[in-house]
Amino acid sequence: MNSLSKLNQYRIMWVFVFYDLPTETKKDRKNIALFRKKLQQDGFTMLQFSIYVRHCNSRENAQVHIKRAKLSLPPKGEVIIFTLTDKQFEMMEFFRGPKETPAPETPQQLELF
Image 1: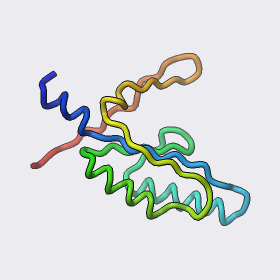
Image 2: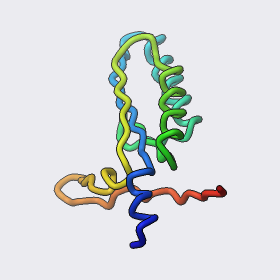
Image 3: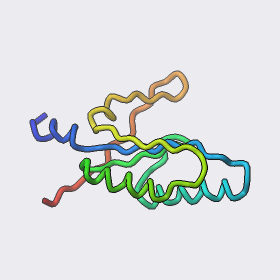
């Protein structure tokens, strides 16, 4: 591993959005659907139910997507947004039942400049 790719492990970010939103009324469910749709339109993918994740090529890019997620917050419920470096994400362990499953692949990023 060269030193540039090692540095990129700390520069590349993952943005996580966790939410726990009320579902009692039809309007609540509509707010959840709208929130999920906006996350997906911004490039987030579902990691688990109520957990969405997005790969970003820099901290600045992560801040842009955090801002967009904040703009689409529903009126009620709890939402947690945080970031991990690519190196920290790599250390996560995923399990399905008693078996370990492979972590989601890192999307390929192209840097033009």
